[in-house]
Amino acid sequence: MKRIKPYNTQTKSFAFYRMLPGIITIILITSPVWTSLLGIYEVLLVYLSFISVFVLFKGLQRLTALFFTTAYQKRDEETDWVTKINSLNLKNLPNPQKLPKNIKELYHLVFIPTYKEPLEYLRRTIKTIANQDYPYKNRFILVLACEQRAGPERYDVTAQIKKEFKNQFYDIWDFYHPYGIPGEIMGDACANLRWAGIESSKKLHKLKINPHHVIFTKSDSDGKYHPKHFSALTYKYLTDPDRYYKFFSAGVLIYSNNYWDVPALTRVFSSALTLGVVAEWIYDKGKKQSFSNYSATFHLLEQIDFWDASLGAEDTFFYWNAFLHLNGKFSGEVFYLPLLMDCVEGKNTFDALKGLYKQQIRWGWGAIIMSVAIQGIIWNRKIPLWIKIEKAFGVLARVYNIIMTFSILMAFTIPILNLFNQELEYSAISYNLPRISSYLMTFTVLLQIPGKYFIWKYFGAPPKEKSIFFKAFWWTFEPFLELLLIWTYYLLPRLQAQFEMFIGKKRVKFFAAIEGKVGDEEYYQDSSQTNKDTKNIQT
Image (cartoon, rainbow, N blue to C red; front, top):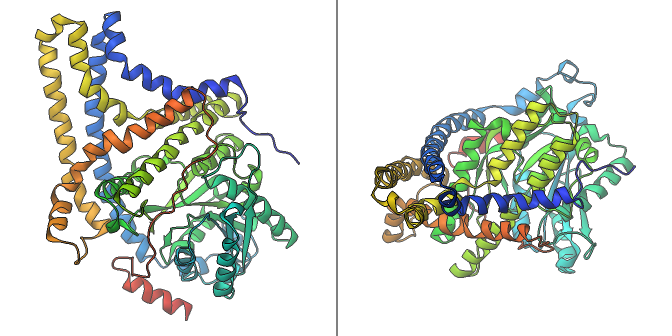
């Protein structure tokens, strides 16, 4: 049965919505000129004052949230999730009608999209799945979502994976997305995942496995899972009365696997991304969208017709596609366990920084999901009005990059206003506004100092083999490189992506980042007791 999409990319309204991020940015960046011409520049000055306070507030909010996250992570790492699962009576759980009769009939299906990652790279991720403390790994199905255009050597890699791990799981499936399907985007995992999702659905039905009895997980190929990840996920899923209307995710996403091997700007970007993603689960949980790694019932995946290979941004697309199909009743649930990821890395410093820039263009193009969200929200009459308004403003706030436009305005507003309004040059507001904003922004920057504690908490101290200069720079000056990051990797790639969408350019290929180097080092701090407990459970 062909499913009807809750959006239509071929309509004029969709074309307008995809222009909207660029329109908003152009209006804001040119505001010193047009507010002067209209004689309402005071509105812009009030806006800048408000944003100065708002940015400071968000910095304090993030810092406060990180203290809570640290406590929750310690709690969840110490929780014996397996014992809690085994104590459950599935019949007594909320809404048990579609659950299996017992826990041994619950399956986990893990999608791992892959392009040209080497064998060691995939092996590292799969090892952390094989080493889970979850006692029923014989109900795990690994799905290698491969690209046919990666070449014949990809078949050798998947064959070796199957050989090494064949006795660890229920089964390992490999599906090869054909090259050249019209309308699909290359360089984003959505095409691999859509193909693998459809093929997995066929196999599950052939095996007579009920989709309601399957939890799927979309895994990045560079992830290192905490040993308790899937037991925590299973418990959270089973005990949630709204399990069929939620996605589930680890709340502590840390880009630390190769953190010490990448350039300073990449480290600053990765640590800022880590702290932002982690804190958001505390202060903005109700608006949280699926990102990177997420899980849900496989039945939902079939219900929403999997991923859309023509749009990209598979993680946020999954959230909005499910939200629209379920008439606004879809949200996220979290468990605070670490999931370690890779930073973008290259052959040398220049190659690594270029790779990060290209990745940020792809992320900037993720704003196209706003077109899906806005159009779908307007079309869907079953979504309550107050939810429509809240979600519409929420998605606009995500696309409208406050830091990006604010940094430009703070640098150029007063000189441009003085050019058009010469009397302003001698006014009190021309004198005081830059100074007040400067004080607020200085305080915001100083929040990097306590923020460094959490960077150390998640990434550790520099390795012993690093030079004294490296260690001194990392501890003192490196956090302030975020000011440079704002004008480079936050600003330029997003401006480029918004401009391309504004002029109607269609992206058919994105940069596929293959992050990081592979190693077998220990990677969970203070995890000796966790590993010991895991071994005891498996024994």
